[in-house]
Image 1 (cartoon, one colour):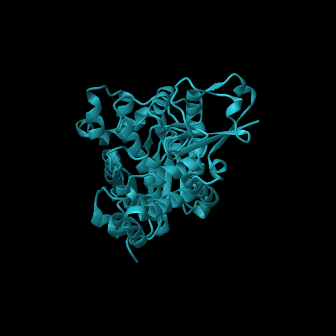
Image 2 (cartoon, rainbow, N blue to C red):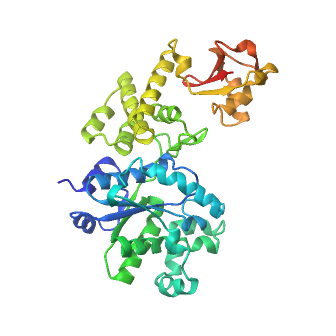
Image 3 (cartoon, one colour):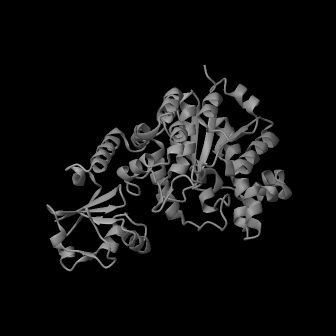
Length: 408
């Protein structure tokens, strides 16, 4: 049987491992591992999806993943990778965000019969007694070593609050708690979490005399140097209300040619030989590889019917067929709203074809805005009932992004 470490390495998931040989031996038997996710938003995005895919690969190899949703740590805020303190969320905001995160995890892993677990660290962090925590846990931490961690070093000049300074201790305590309750011996995360994860493994060694391991994945950037999952309209979310399936599909089908093979390996479960075959396609054939990437990722996140609809819509719009308008993402408006004329700039922002009024203005000025196939060059253009065709108006931004407005 192939060791899961070989699979992860082959597919590009591994940036660093605390004890590769020790972990390899431990993985010869089923084990429990975890990754933590603070509820800073109502949805995961495709940056989070990388670690979710790692958990899913472990489950497919016979191990038990544990997803920790940070109802407790979310009240503190992780300083890693941030130049300023995160906004403090209310308990109500955290709980609302948690509801969406739980349902999204269930798309990628099987939680039946204890095959995977979702736990909330608020269950053990909130009841902690501060003095007892300092005596039992805090005494194992060196302030000098903590300040040497990259997450803290980069924040010292800008200002690091005492609240954030405690984050490493809380994350380490999560690992210890999961070791005690579920015999969890492996924590995974992004490379920016390396110091926090190691602190947990070290705490287990000091308090329990046991061995624990850490595996972190690379922080992904595109071939052009941009952070993975960022677009001019913001993050690419897993929630269909925040990033509709068609837009999700379009993100993947329009990735840089140089990223296709790597993303197929990371974000799909296709066999690695098929990944390499698709990644080796050239020229026009590479479009097919991108469509496979877009279909597979969309099917995992939103289901096969949504992926098929997005693919059909993409084909129709790309080909300019007569059905292209019906294939576009659609919203509805009342006819009365059009009688006085709706500013095109406002519609471009409202439909998500532009991220702001300034971006919409630039789009129009650069000749990238179209209404029913006609290029619009005036930033003062308005849409009136005369523009409707068969009770609808079709907006386009650039060559590939469409939105249809049905008018009742």
